[in-house]
Length: 311
Image (cartoon, rainbow, N blue to C red; front, side):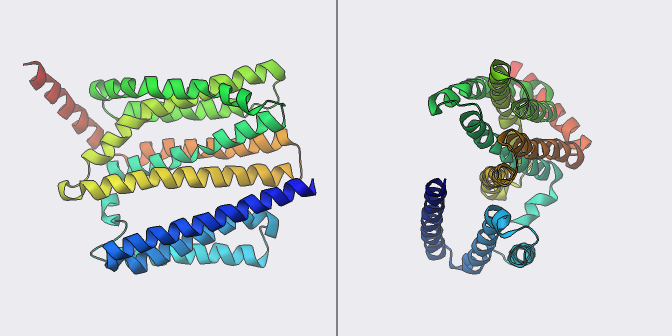
């Protein structure tokens, strides 16, 4: 047991070292290309490192320990300072003025939250191997439906976008993905029943993401100013990557922390519940932030374009 723990610690240290090297190389390239963003990079990378320590080491340190609370306070201060500095810079890493557009903000927030659901992949695959005795190959085969569904439904999402606008496929995509995640949390099911639930859950996970992808991307890009389309697309994609990273880190932390004091079944269920919460928040962001006026105008514009193409 101690050997396994040491191996895990060594892997984590190796990962941190390579992560620091990667960040340093990225920072050097950015500073050489755009010297103005040097201060922004320093603030953002420092804040991200503290967030990483808070999420991954909080359980070991104790969530109410001094060092954990200090990390939380530094994170909050770092985010506030970063936003303030970015808003005052003419050349910024993140152009926060883009978020004044509600449809763009809704698409980006929901994209961040939905990609955070990626933590389900880690928790579910870990649980079926540790708790159900699956091999790596068998657990991989359980997720084959995810790949097929994503590839098949991207085109379907595009067709739904053309016919009914972006709101419906975005909402239904997130709902289907969240339901798929919830199915994988039914660890109380016996043997074969749980295997079927996980397979269906992975398929629904991919199906929902496939439906959501194109309408969300279209909403974000089409609602950004013409002179900021590149920046808007970059921020949207960054939200996707950050969402996945935070989702995996948070889910794995919840799973590991609970597995240390309880059963792996409870740990897996709670880890997946964290991802279900991300899915619910993604739905709320689409409904509450995106304006009805936009959806109506967007649908009318698409109908007009389709009419012009026909005649």
